[in-house]
Amino acid sequence: MPPVSATAASLHSHESTNVRDVTTSTLDNRPYAARPARIGLQLQPQHADYAAIRQAVAQAEDLGVDVVFNWDHFYPLYGDADGKHFECWTMLAAWAEATERVEIGALVTCNSYRNPDLLADMARTVDHISGGRLILGIGSGWFEKDYENYGYEFGTAGSRLDALGEALPRIQRRLSRLNPPPTRRIPVLIGGGGEKKTLRHVAEHADTWHGFGDAETISHKHAVLDEWCSKVGRDPGEIERSCGVPGDVDVAKRADELYEVGTRLLTISAGGPDYDLGRTRELVAWRDDVNKH
Image (cartoon, rainbow, N blue to C red; front, side, top):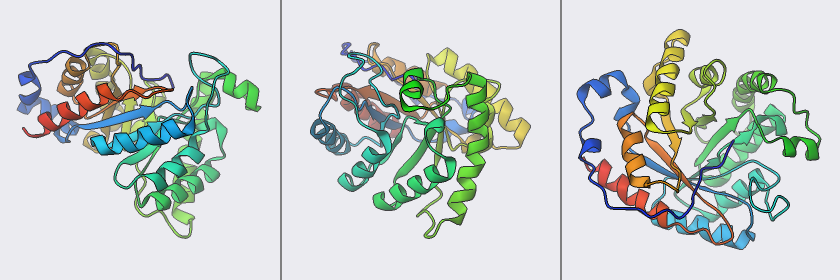
């Protein structure tokens, strides 16, 4: 899925009384809004040596970030198309050993790249290495260069989404058969905004939905997801709402706006080679302030 932008736009002080005053009607209509705010950081595994990535993971944990993500690609998404890049799941296993508190995961795993039963076993293993801190982020895949160069069939957007729908119950079945089992019910995050298939998959299988857009767009997607929950008999309050926060806007203002429509996991990204976490630090402070009320 596309990266969360993390450019160095200036962050201004902000008034956040609108965030504190989430109305009773909002909570009634959006039960997922009762959750606390959390901050995610996506460390793009591109254009950097692993030592820099490892240092950024440690720094993120020290800052108090809730979740650290990477992504699941084989080439950089921008910049030098053939620049430095590392694989997703072997990196997650290393992060599991290198960290103690923060949750970890991919934003998101491409379903096409691994047999669903194998992916379940990989997830179970990283779950154990981390002591129960893995989030299984997954999506249908989109980056054609990965497919072409690594020998995967690209298909169509529809066929990839259908394959995702078939894989999700297979993953759960395999998790239920593994010995030893996972240390916990591994939370599933599904990324993508398609209203006909993706959000249905979210309603049926996910613990977190991750999307992109401004508050108006995300509010609409929440409503569509709530409709799918009603159709499949799922409590919409069971699904955490997550969104990327671009770094090239006033990030605190955008966080306020997303929070107001029920988003509770807000993720910003940082890229190599230096991994500037200044925006991340601001969002962690914003989270702490919001969660006091």
